[in-house]
Image 1 (cartoon, one colour):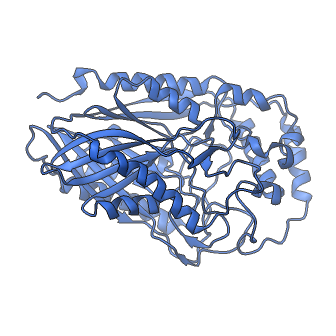
Image 2 (cartoon, rainbow, N blue to C red; image 1 turned 45 degrees about the vertical axis):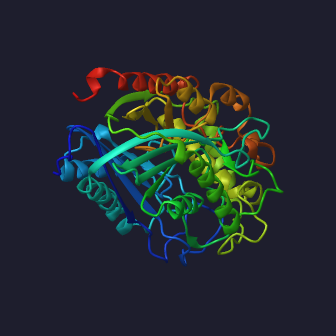
Image 3 (cartoon, one colour; image 1 turned 120 degrees about the horizontal axis):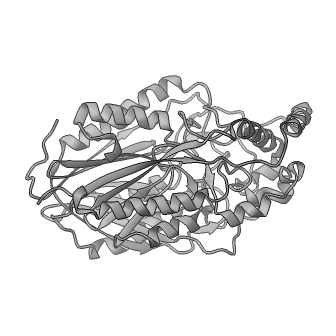
Length: 470
């Protein structure tokens, strides 16, 4: 393994790798279409950042995929440890939640979620690609400085469950410099579903994180930009609240505008960030067993409704979505596809309801900056609560990390749909707005546990025992 240079202070290394699947495979996560990927609009990528202080090292890899399932994470961590010696709890495997990437769960804990077939060869190579990026970054370790600040990107996102609710418009930025002040890595986070492009294209693309990174790197061509997805379970781009038939069109131009606007918010705070050589690194994690949601509907009722749906004639889907179909309203255009998927999930959730969901929460620290990572599509309110309870001046709160645990709304939102009959909750003309609540996997109270346990991890990171000696 590569020993960190100049062990008296921070060292950093960064690398990237292309992970685009080939054409001819199912094109991303959008159903109700039959076409296969026919090309590439922009390459899917993964970026890795390794930070070291003394003998302690942490690694962060962010990939343009929709899920970083438990199986994928375990494979990446094993290979990273073989190549570098970095321990598993210090390796964060993060998905930008890009909906224009293949729909692969890779061993996630969500009931009813299946890997789309055809990606076996690509999926088999993906752990090596991600671990290889970490290895390359570790080999490039050099003396560095780090610091962070928080920008603001207002008007870029909306609460898609209730458009009257506030959003998390914060843009945390971690700046990692060479000792001469030249940026090595710029880490940017924002909470927003990467759904600005949907089923109207058959081109692999990065959604808005790609143009965001490109704009940052255009301003600082010597640096590599990493994007980290925040707690976006109830947040969407622009005015794409669920059920909005008049939402801003899903075009590459609007996608790029969104990415560049978030990048501008990050670039605005970048010059004012004070970086420090004595930014120590630390990592910790904890395992949780969480209770699954108890559905009020019987197995017999679920089976009966599933049979009714299966007997209906499927529409003649086109290769791509017709003009005018929008992800904010697509389930009302194509309700049967959604309803069959929902009942499949409910049936498996009912079968598994006595089994806990085993999950991992993780926290990393770089000087006075922390990263709290969970595997859920946590709603933005609980995500903001984690940040508020952090003892660090700047805290990135991430979902979609080290596994995929599905949607996790707060208890009040679960209470809004618990008494609703099954056939009614499947009616997309009435309950499209509740997506993310109707398909939640965990019971009431579990979002609060994720918040409190994440806060405890952040408190652990300030324990001197976790910091290397000076």
